[in-house]
Image (cartoon, rainbow, N blue to C red; front, side, top):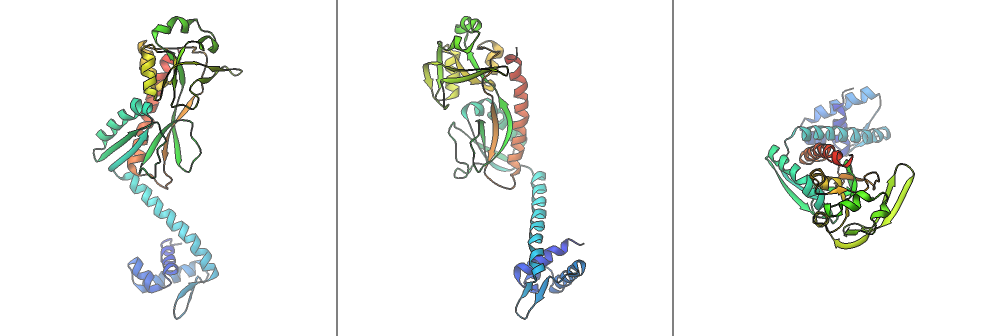
Length: 305
């Protein structure tokens, strides 16, 4: 079967006329009529009924037209997708990301992205608030942690561990601790950007579980601010591994209770609902995934010792 004939038939049904279908397709009326006649011969079915005023589909024609529309739409989408894949990323890429992950990871990827694709310009909004992508005309968001249900589309690009860390001022208490309760009375810096900044759930192996309430000494509403307070000895706190990897490697911070685990979280790229992604978005996400893999290799070294 010549699948091009589906487009001729669909155009006749859509316009109700061989003449208007020919105008839409940029061919002669005779070509349209001939192609539809061949299609009916191929199918051995009458698809159209011609009246003095209008061309109407038969019942079989209506059913076949519904299928044709889907087939033609899929074909058009396939061409569009290939064209986007082949196109060089251009235009403005608008991204929102949390302060901590955005500063630690996304900014470096953006620099590499704009160097590779100079026809692209990037606008990055760093915010721990959940930004509305549609009203804010945002191409994509980076979300860290646990996603809430929504109509948005998401792709998991990585994961991270949460680590209880402290500065050298607490080295003796950290090294002496055997259970989470041993550290509960020490000064703790609460991250007010979290839903439960003081209650933490620890696990060891498959069976041991502990829920511990830490004692707040300082409360800060951004994760980078919490990290700064931990570095200067303000207290212990729980921070994502990608943010403290350099501090752990240099000895500025140390992990408390490395044999105990806190819940791991995900790192996601989130988009407004759409059938296809612009090339600038897909190209950036692939670069971010590659950077995330490199980060995983780096942060696994100090925390697994």
